[in-house]
Length: 331
Image (cartoon, rainbow, N blue to C red; front, side, top):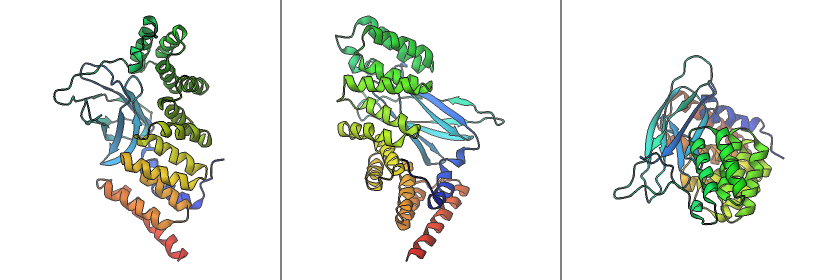
């Protein structure tokens, strides 16, 4: 059962998480886009995309198989989108994205990221490694590629039709199961998404991608306890991404496993330096009645984000001061 956030956590919820939450709740705008090579093809593997605002790390996500990403609950402002380089083919690439809406109606903004190739590097094939599997019939591969293209054009319903056809022809197509799960999730067809992820896991239990997708979806649904097993399994397979550590640490915190949460949130920060790791750790240490450690992480968050708006800096310092008072009372 998920823990209840009491008065102690309310301090951080109101005073700190406002920076990444309430600060953006004045509007519910969304920012979406696609990461692509100069010729328009999608990278063969998911790309980590970071969103920053006034120098502050806000969110981090990975692209889907079509290279798409999205962020929600954003207020007006100019953001920076950074696609992290892969160390082999393309450089880390940053672009600006303006979210400038009039009125109170939610709007969707689009900003794509064109990757910069490393010197002397050529664009890799657009198809995934699995598409070279000789067991996959040509027609199934064609339907899969059409589905990925529709997903890249933000047409999830059309994408589902093509991906379903690809799977009808070749039910063992792992990447098609993962891709259709992502599209079902976008359409809020959660049961179908979960079933598709599970089928992918059955087909290739040694691959991490479906475990991560399932775990992240469950966390977003606030099914924290259910999310823990697939996220832990993904990290037994692949330990180089900060995202599953971050989502797992949050799920463990929300289910009361503070020791495991601390370890995984620290690991998430060690790998990818996501600003949210400091926020989650501060929240965790406040729950553990360790205000001095919570203060350390809030200070680190301030130091790493020197261009925060003055209002946000004030809120953060007020949260630190309240934690200091808690610490003094305990002494």
